[in-house]
Image (cartoon, rainbow, N blue to C red; front, side, top):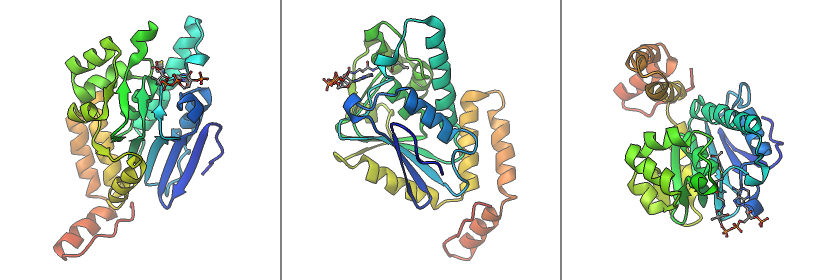
Length: 260
Ligand code: CAA
């Protein structure tokens, strides 16, 4: 896959791609380069078919991403609406990615950084990480889906508290309210995410894709989401992996999934 993106480092570990936002001096603030790179990677044909999982993290030990790059903001209403729409498009691609995406949150996840983590399917946070939507402190509101995904994860009341106070919460609190799935020891969010991803990629890939689609359907098209699960359940029985998984169970052996 293409690995040469400004302000991003891409490493491939077997079938797992690790994307690192590489702007530690700016606390990995999400500038246009980062957003364009993510848009290309998660866009059509960005991830090769052999990729089974993606991890997103930040470089250095201080930040996952401290938000959209404030230095790139302009007071042009059209330009900011465009910036927001591009961010929405990119983060939607991550949310709807055909393979599981885990955020290894190694430090500050603020504003657009928190929104990026929330667009991923699973979040693992370093114990010293902190989260927040501080946009209100700048006199603006989240522009990359924060007002929508935060209530989905933590409920409306807690989301409004985080959004309206603009205060940061620590990893313990983020874990307590369900914003993150697991906490890691300091410096261990990426290894812990890789460990979890290795479990995930050992499972049936088409089933993983259908699970993501069915769960997303609840939010994207709630009137059809139960019907979508029924369709996907039926479809999963047409895969070679279903034959393999069910035979392996009956034969008391470990399944070997091929993603077919
Ligand atoms: N954009 C651009 N640069 C940023 C940045 C951001 N979001 N966050 C930090 N930086 C830069 C700082 O300007 C500073 O650069 P210089 O050395 O050139 O001055 C460098 O990163 C280090 O930052 P600090 O000196 O501020 O580090 P600190 O440890 O004292 O504070 C912090 C850390 C509390 C995270 C603080 O940097 C901060 O409050 N950052 C801004 C957080 C924020 O408001 N995020 C939301 C952005 S808006 C948004 O994201 C909208 C959206 O939804 C699309």
